[in-house]
Length: 123
Image 1 (spheres, helix red, strand yellow):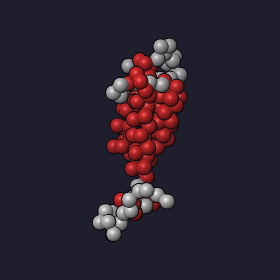
Image 2: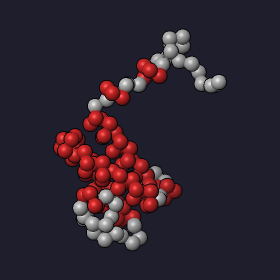
Image 3: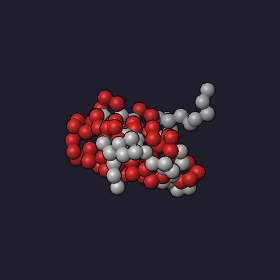
């Protein structure tokens, strides 16, 4: 049994089904950009760019997230149009530069996270 309060018509609060959309109704561009924003946010936290950043800094985790983001952005750019892809590319480049700056021993140009998809990133 659950201790969670019930929802729906009896309580006057909207039920779960009322608050969610069927995934089939969500346009692909929305799913892709939402995933990209989540990857960006998680990478930024792991780069120590959030409040109390050093507490959450983990460059190994940030590398993985930036690599996944670069793959997603590169693979989907032609499908989601420049209007959506350009800001994602800008965010990706900012994260790649922040990673390079945060690294004690920076990767060689072209070897940083995501650079196999984007090419070398320079400041």
